[in-house]
Length: 104
Image (cartoon, rainbow, N blue to C red; front, side, top):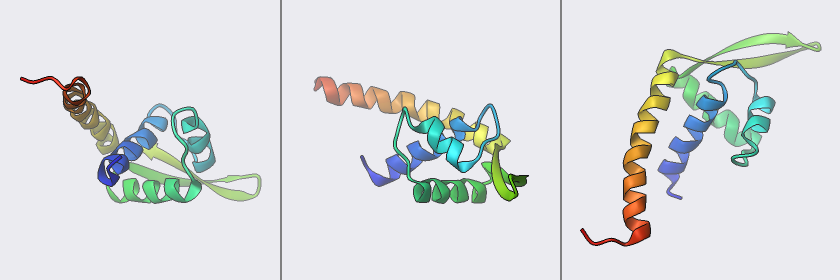
C-alpha cells in the first residue's frame, strides 16, 4: 500500500478507536488488533501527528502511581473521519474499476 494512503488510513483508524470514548495507547493498540497490527512506536507517532493537527487532545491522569495519557477526539478529528468516508467512497469506485478491469 502506498505510504501516504497507509498513513491516512492509520490516522483515521486511531480516530475511530477513540471516537466514542477517550482511550490510552495500550488500549488503542488492543482495540485495533482485530483490524490491524500497530506497534507502539507507530501509534505514538500517529498520536503526535493527530495532536499537532488538532484532531485530538491529550490529558494525563494518574493511574497506579504513574501518569497515563488519555486521548480525546476533537471536532476536527470527527470531521476528518467524515472526510475519509467520502474519500473512501471515491476510492472504492476506482478499486472496483481496477478489480473488474472494465472498459468504459
